[in-house]
Length: 222
Image (cartoon, rainbow, N blue to C red; front, side):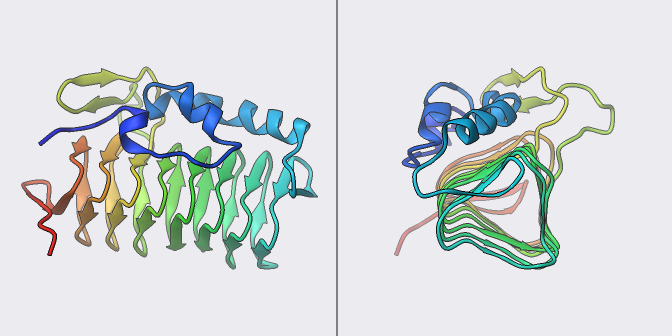
């Protein structure tokens, strides 16, 4: 099974204000150190139809933000998105349209493309989530190794990212069940589904069903 890791293999970025960032990075983790400055540059230039919500925070049209949610800048929340009660956006967060940033979930230095759902008790730090990607309740993107060393992503070869903090990279249509832990540098391929209560690491191929790290099968379409 091909363990894809390049940005253009994992994502089809059609979000106009995010496309330049995606197109400039061969590997998705290369975007992580650039997120803050990229957001600030977009805020300075402005995005058509987007308005200022607070300092260094832009929101699109028809964004629903519950009163108990906290949004720290810099951040851009895409049109039609929902920031649910207790959500904590810690800065350097940018989303496409129609995303769900869920109740009691925390987001930090991350990118969410279109129609991403992290709806219940999730942690998304130093991560990239593709179009229609989904995290089940209580699933987290762990972003720091216990030894604090730079994250090495283990695919068909090893990729030394030189970054201390990398969470998870979820490709378009990746679907993670409830209660999963995505260890630092986990990459989940397009159209891959993960059973609940799994602990994952390394690169998971596209088009698979993950029952455990030792039981990954190719998805068979009806």
